[in-house]
Length: 76
Image (cartoon, rainbow, N blue to C red; front, side, top):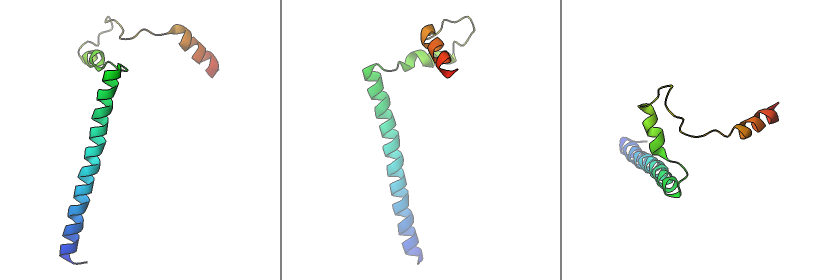
């Protein structure tokens, strides 16, 4: 292969790599947007956890003790 062919091949590979990365990041951002609109996750309550991580702070979510108990029993 001559130099010009290698340069062209490198250009095409860079273009397709950037295209793949763009598609991956765009799909991730779209999935976050869709989950936020559906109300599946509330990211705002988790983002405050970084600043408020003391042992005395209230839990973010209530735990279902019966569900945990059934899961432990099914494992045994």
